[in-house]
Length: 421
Image 1 (cartoon, one colour):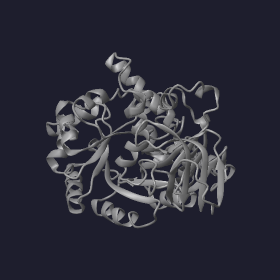
Image 2: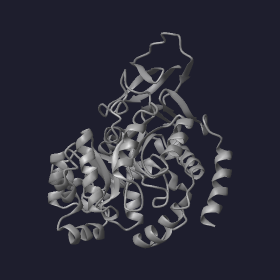
Image 3: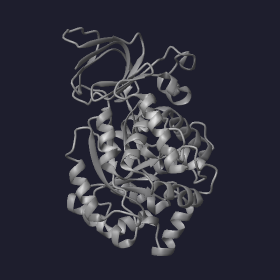
Image 4: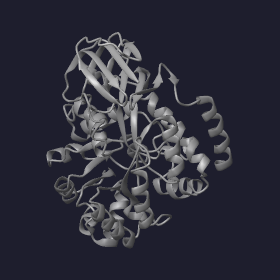
């Protein structure tokens, strides 16, 4: 399909300049960005009437199918939440449940202008099918731990899902140090070295996690991963709230991606990631995730962007800390690169046609002094009018084009009652 978006404001994210003109697509790729150019031959021409088009947001850390636990186990201490409420109910998840709850999450992503997600979960065949059926792009992350999975199984997943479908890719990963025995960690390190592949995991989310690792190994999780050789080809950490100076130096030296999840970290009282201090130490690879709906509970990149900058201003006692465009770059470009989606980072000819359209003619977007600042400081999901993935319109003016919402809601409700009682 060839699409023409004209009378548009365009933020390519190659810099902070907003230009006026057109964006054309040809199949799954962007074919043109520039001034007025009706070259004809389009399947559909869309007059944006001054609306903004930009690269879609990338949710760089989530557990999509955890939508089934939204508002189920709130207001609990982290360990009670995880071990007494989350894990026991996750054990009841079926293939059908993963499929349906993933679709529910994807609908929320699309309505929020999110065009891809970096998902750590299990029953990946059902998860992948849900994404393929919806036409949604996702990167799967290995989730091995002491409760399930093997290193050989992770290797099989790595090869299978990196060749399954153009919308699906896979990165090596494990759940966390505190849920994974050393023998498994060593096996994952060898796997990373074998494939020269990056490694991803929950890292230093809580102070107790870090202190526990020090008791077990005499060092922090990041230092342990580095000692085991699993960071030689980069990768990243989800949360990274309790990094010390040596952790930051390792992250800089190894080119690790820091994926911050501010809503989840606040709600679970985990802390505020020291992003400004990381930047001062030369770490510039940063992205944003929502985490799962059991701990957030809202899969909304606008809320995450605001919290990233607001929490850093609070932590630094400096209202100038972490400017809006830096946060927007994390949400669009940083997330894509953290996930290995190098063709989805900016709008440019030849890049993937993964885009979001934002209505600027709404009260919270007016007046327009600075569009990136409007997006970060006052933007909400209500401003999203269209989400395009792989050159296909999946969401437009409240309508989902590849899924029946009522069917998903009905099936999800039935499954939740069976699982949670």
